Length: 459
Ligand code: F0G
Image (cartoon, rainbow, N blue to C red; front, side):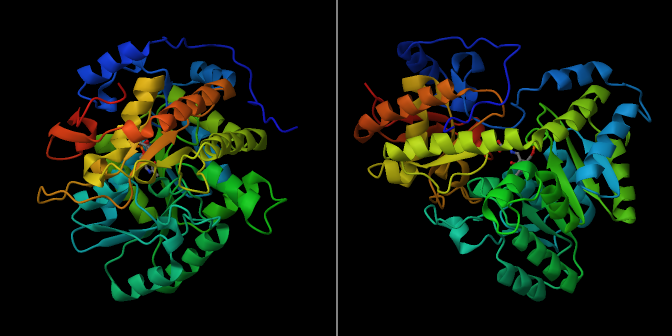
């Protein structure tokens, strides 16, 4: 069969409120063209993020009722810990309310202003948490990972030669090496088993621990199964176990591949670090058997982890992202290829060459998608990264628009609708105009800045 169906039926639905283009033009103008400021009621298809937006299963909802809310020693914590250890056999599992809380605890333990933390590519909260300690976050992704059109099957790989040299050059200043699977900031691209294993060998040589930022570990594992020789017949569970067997610890946002709306954890083997981590946890998150979560959340995570490694689910998940990517390419929309696991990244600079980087082509495309079809996407370009610490502006490396696909939420007809909207935007692309920023906060401006079109967008 060519059609890969959603491997679930829908038991409970959430209505989408229909809007007209005229209404949407008014809504977006009202919020000064900032898509983060829109009410989600005014969005038809929300592709802003795949984080915390998953649909839970009937079994997870049943688990929510089973959640034991004891302050200490809850059986829900034991189920959470047991399920994680079955996949990721670390000695200490420390629950947190989401991924960045795990990052904050980890880096406040190991990092200070004399330190450097290398990664394939740090996600922005990871980078911010590293930098908050005074340390430097350094990206060492392979060259293909920065080339939007390279067909490399594992564009998320860390450059092992550069990593080795980096550890030689900065001896005594690198408390750990991080690898993000999949590489969200680099287009949702996977990291190969060979690469993780290679990084492990280098870390061993320099006696430095290796941590995985593992938000999308299951998608990464399925890419390994599909693309890496020797893993065709391995089960995803065994692939996941092998990936983590090379690591000394991990940070996790359960809002992605644990199929829940909130949650995360920090895990590690080192007893001394774990002791310190739990002490910080008690200060900022909660007691070690619930962290920042309710007992019911721990149950939902435990069940989500079992569901996310189901191969029917993963086949559907990667095929549905690929389906959107293939259709967009066939109508001429330039993308980062191969498409990633959780999102399709449109190369807005290439689609709208008449809009200069500092007139924000990504924003022009994102606003057009909203006006035409009520689709909410996210600019990842010069608005997000262009402002320099001294207040000046520099174009970002790429001008992208991310279409992140929530897990188990939209059906193929929703995606077909997105494709149809793109067809219309593509027809009118030469008339799209850039934006200027009329108001911005000193940091993280993309969340709250105000914009104005340089001329009316799509008359
Ligand atoms: N690491 C990666 C690779 C992420 O993608 C995210 C979140 C985090 C860490 C932080 O986790 O949100 O639970 O605190 N990414 C979301 C996104 C926000 O839209 O890509 P968190």
